Image (cartoon, rainbow, N blue to C red; front, side, top):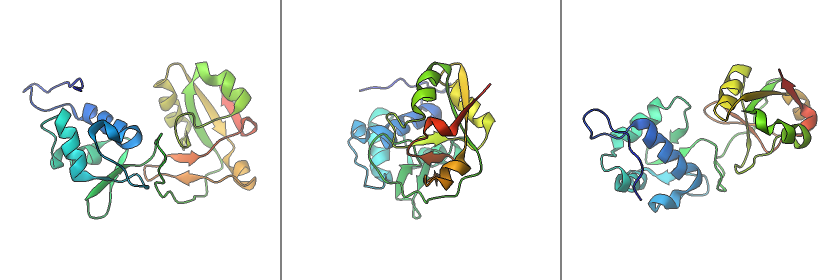
Amino acid sequence: MRHDTQNDTQGTTPNLTKLSKFMSLILRHKPETIGITLDRHGWADASALIAGIGKEYPTMSRSMLEKIVRTDNKQRYSFNEDGTKIRANQGHSIPVDVELPEAEPPRTLYHGTAQRFTTSIDAEGLLPQSRLYVHLSPDEQTARKVGSRHGEPAVYLVDAARMRRDGYVFYRSVNGVWLIKTVPARYLHRLE
């Protein structure tokens, strides 16, 4: 299976954004795509990941992997302490426990989505859909940016303080994304 590669002007190095998206597919959803497995905490052997990606992108190397992790603007990935393992920080559709610590949320959080989903959200609240958690943003601007990736954006204010008082558990990923299993509609207010 060959993936589209936008090459640089020399025609030899795959675009790092494309490599990062391919890594996201592997580390969040389909490790079997390149014949690797994730442990129960979502960790993959870094050398096996490089070798597997190298089947599709022959120029893949340790230095490219490190550059992707270091420069990813969403901080999607982390190495373990000795750099031998790598995982996606959140966003998995496969069952893994990325060992997120329970965290005290700010008073309010935000969720960005597309306008076309507002009817179901207004009725059912926020559900994780194909992911393990609902993703929440710390500010309206970030949520609006997330929502615009899916079409005309809609932003919801989440009453995190009230949810916490009511016993809901929040987690915070290493890249600052707030995660929760679900957000019932009564804790949501759609912003104009």
